[in-house]
Length: 265
Image (tube, rainbow, N blue to C red; front, side):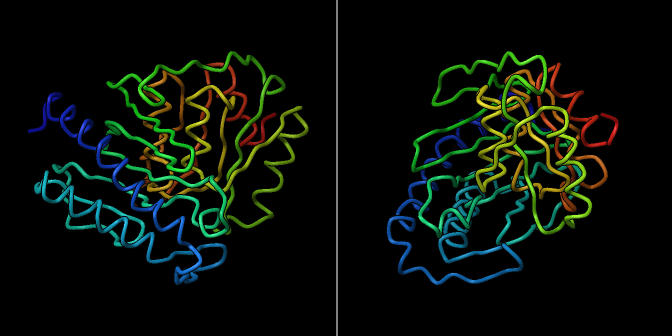
């Protein structure tokens, strides 16, 4: 049985590991012209940087916590039972910005136990920003507390909007239009994990995306919750394996974004 001290041990281990993995990925980034890049689907790219960074993370976790399961974007899921904790990892979220020489990419790590998101973290190596936290771990940016955005309405800040070709434009565009009709403004940077982290940091007033995979968002969702903000229940309806919608914001913007998503605005 995992107690809180064991979660704390994993949390501190993950903060060290994510910086280590970030340096590996950053080395590839600085030499990206020599990378072999492959397409996994429409607007879905990967290179040896993604795979080798994930392999390093996976090995370090297996050595330190051999009883835990692992789910990674590149290597998939290990044998997993309901009584296990599971690490959910994206070695490079924002691969398209990564291979394009942009700084908007990150490493994301989360830990789930008993279908509860215990903690997570997101590290953007080029910007040297580490967002970390969870329901029982007050969220920080490079070790310092973060301030919530004070927005009371969608007109008082910028909303992160995510999109992937898994959702057809005909489903996405009406929601997007409702946000603009409500006087909202949108922001997109190519990494769901990083953009969600900006909600936790008070840079954005919320986030909305019709479908996102677990490895792309759980690390940041944990940080958002550790910052005292609200998110949709991502793990509902097999979100871990199938992905889900994600909505995030403060006590005022979150209900407004739910209405935008559901078409009630």
